[in-house]
Image (cartoon, rainbow, N blue to C red; front, top):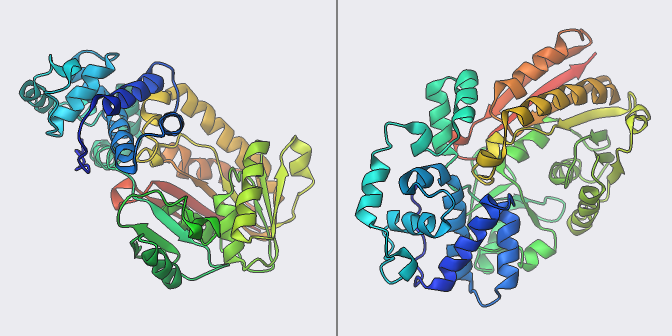
Length: 403
């Protein structure tokens, strides 16, 4: 469990009430933390930036550590007691809040420490997920990754090289009061030195950067796309990787960005316009015919498939409590279906990347091996895993060639 050093604000009841109300929506109404906080801040314009940061970081940390806090308090649905206990663990004075009068901070800390020999509780993961991950990764590796995934995710920017360079963007951000540092091994990545809202920045509105984790940036580069090629991003979503590919290809050639959700492609159109990425063609997958029409057309094919999302728990801790073993099994079936059907869009001699934001071999290398078993015309050239313990999100990528 990670205790973050928050920028301390004066603790008053409206702040605590906002945290409690948010947790109620996440755990009782089954809503997602980011959406809940977005709505909370929209409805409470009186909160300043420090207040919003305090609320958001505490809500996310309580979501991360929900099992531990439930065991400490024995009150999993009493979000006042849960919140007060969490604040007490961070040595924040809660004595003046009447709703916390039954909480003894020393007792809370002592109970927390008593769970150190029960890692599923102490690191706060459901038993079924620990069993699954230990089975696939081994006990030592799983607990290393489980601990790392309880750390707060860094904010990583991807420099849009269609409009600027990393050094120029870093200078402009610094002039705007946004300090960054380059990320070793990732040529277009900058890391924020301090968490702050950068979506209001004129540099963002002008399309000079996107928010994109370093590991996600590595996937686009792994595809080895070149200017002038025909590239298909077949599970494009909001198009973060398609935008990166447009920059890699210097706006030359064609990127067909496909998805089964029209609203995601609409979002991509807005982002592409802001980025000045003019070689992206969003295309809705309406049925199997959409895939058939592109049979053998792609020089490069990206299959960034739906997955469990276990690699991005740092930024999506809800996944701990909203995932199920049944969902993961259904997702693995879908992954194999996509590999089997969509790979036909790759032309002979072309390269394909299969990627996930999961750390499970069952969603990663094992899926590639299953696909290759009866397909001698495909060859695995190389694969690569990025683990959360390395500092960023967890990703897997495999580069295959069609002969």
